[in-house]
Image 1 (tube, one colour):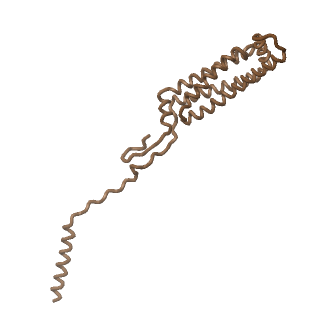
Image 2 (image 1 turned 180 degrees about the horizontal axis):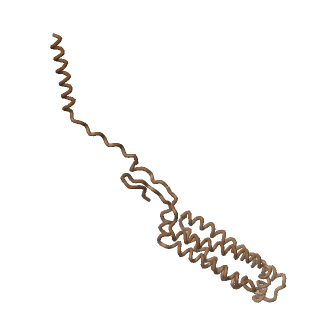
Image 3 (image 1 turned 60 degrees about the vertical axis):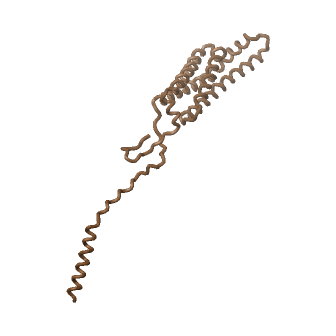
Length: 212
């Protein structure tokens, strides 16, 4: 009786073994990807293209020349005031001397304040341009028109005398630098850089590395 039970147990074990052996092997599931295809893009800070950097250099050069012109114009104030008086007197010569002196002061300080204000506005606009704010080029172009106006008025009113030629050269250099900066800012590479607004980096699954 015992032998029969042992035979039944051995037969059952063999049958289970055969069933397990006959069961097809399941393929191992693939490992889940580490990177999600729906991962959000990552903002990065990339160096601007060559055209933008050249534009930035020309703006900085114009600021340097403009700052020197403002300081130089202040230093030669005592030499410029009599020349401004003579220019005003040539327009109308039947006024008291005090009137011409006051008018010369008004003209001098108006030009000085205009030069300084224009310089500060252009610095602010350059910061906005490097941050890729829309429409900045039009405002920069508007400052160019004002700068050309100051240059024309300066030649007629405040750039005469012994130091007038040096002041004219500084103002002319500043004007040319601004023109070149605006031309460089409108190159295709600079326009595309501004239109992109932000540099983003996204890693796609299966790619060799990050893509911009």
